[in-house]
Image 1 (cartoon, one colour):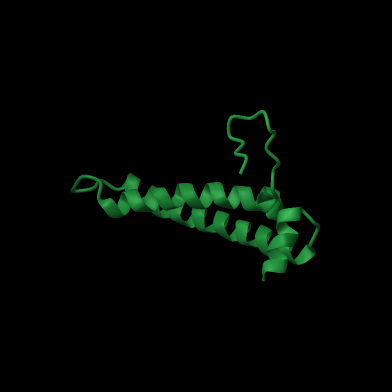
Image 2 (tube, rainbow, N blue to C red):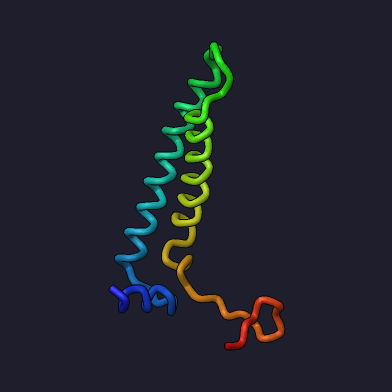
Amino acid sequence: MPNNLDRLRKGERWWTAEAVLRSFGVLLLAGSYRLGLVAHRWATTPPPHQATLGEFAVCLAIAVCLTSGLALTMFGPKLFEHVPIPARSAYYWRS
């Protein structure tokens, strides 16, 4: 397993990682769509109460599924590639 993670960090092309991560991104987008339908149904019916914690949790799940699904679908394994930080950056830490 560490060998596979090293391949992802180096940015090597690996068709199984491409297929798995991008299909997982599509599944997250489909889940976001289904949760969006549920939230829409809840929003269009007149509620007898204020918004509950569960309704806020569904909306949070929509946002998380949508952003991670888009990132995985568009970039795939490139998300795990190391990005070099220049030495002049404020975030560079020399150990």
